[in-house]
Length: 518
Image 1 (cartoon, helix red, strand yellow):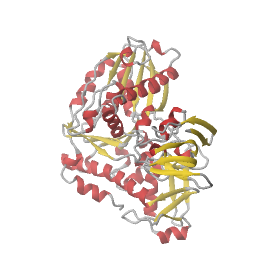
Image 2 (image 1 turned 180 degrees about the vertical axis):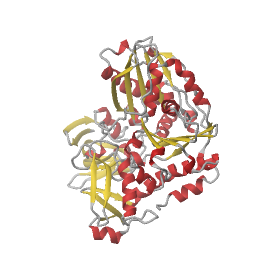
Image 3 (image 1 turned 90 degrees about the vertical axis):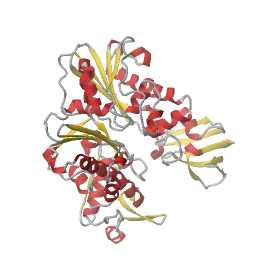
């Protein structure tokens, strides 16, 4: 099929084969779609509009000749004729302008190492951040989306890709090294081949893929990774564009579900140094947590899902220009929005979604079950009804539906229940926590009062919380500058007792309770 493609940037054409979904054809033509589920037809983020021609969409024949159009998922739509025409809305395109967190606190002491040029890389599922270190000083930073996004925005879909396709593992390795890390190196240094050392911190699946090792065993019980301690190798063996004989080292993982990014965070934050009860929580799709209490350490993870990253929400988005980062709602229904970069809002990112739940409940627009109050919204002029369901109009074209609220409640319930269950297992009351380390880019933007109001975080005094930012990158930069401290990383990787949350007494009850808004 000769395919005519309309986007906000103009009109282009390409050849589409009947054997391939349009999502793949468009990707090869340089048009990246928002394939958060890896093209498995689940997320609905790659919606396109069929304008003219014959297609097979989700197994159904679609023929368009007149003024009517059809909205379909590009990943389940195949060409079935000689000519066709489609239109791609801006919301369906993959955005590469999302924020990449390169800040952290505290900044570790990098002095006393071997010197020279080294680089630290935090390989996140969504984004990759890097720092260049010269003689113990951070001299440059860079970040970009992880180009593995076309296989899905989560580790489960990337593991599934490795299971279903023999070449997927190699493609995922190439996407993170050739398409992501090497371009970052070119941004950081005029001549990356002067760099003699790279330290990597990442979750266990990402680290395996970086090493071009299979992560498949992590996807099924008992979730045992091939490696917890990763070998030190020459850069050339992985295709990393630093000095060919330069050394690659990686933060060791605690388990299949709690990776080297958490180990790096434990070292970088000085976790446990107070001698009292401490909790570290890395907020993300897979919320990892580590608890230290009376000489014992436990680690676990809560599958919060991608709702706080904007996935599977009607108008959710990642932190990027146009994202609603914070909002306040008056008793009269007046909204004040804080939009990243200013200008018109395009959707809610995670911190804005947390604010919405807290503010809508406080103002009486949400009941304890997460149901919108239609009378209140009608009085405010914010009620929207779609497909028999109610929605809250945030701004022009931006509506939060009850289905969106249900997904957000499930995410916050997973985090809250995970914390409560871990504390209960250790015999710890929340008020015993002396230091609560909050890590990750989401944590830096989070309004603590809102997170506590909706039951995602325990109600503790503000000084107890320490916002660490990208502590994975902080640990990686420490390891890059001071490779002699690897033994400390290995100690922390071996110390915690790994606990599957669903095995803990009372987790399910805490999760069900967490689905409510107080």
